[in-house]
Image (cartoon, rainbow, N blue to C red; front, side, top):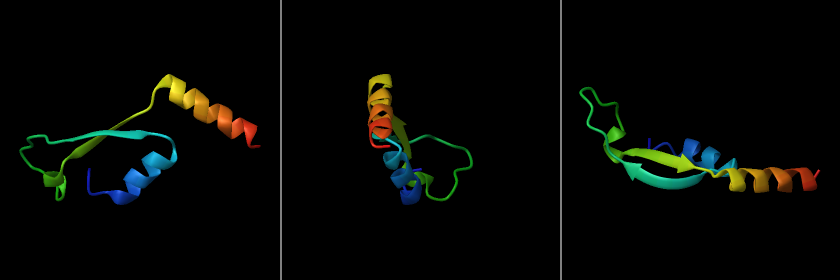
Amino acid sequence: MAVDTASRAAMAAVGLRYVRTFHLDRDDPIPGSEFGEVEYAITRRERLARRSQAHEST
C-alpha cells in the first residue's frame, strides 16, 4: 500500500526499487487503499551486484 512508509523504506533498504503505484477496484477496500498499491522490482543483475558488495565489505 502506498501509504505504508515503513514498508517502503524496508523495501528500499534491501535493494528493491520502486516501479509504480497502481489502483485496483475492490468490493471491500481497506483504509488507505485509495492511495494505491505499489510495485517494486529488482533484477537478477542488481541482486547479484548487491550481494557481491555485501561480501566485499565483510
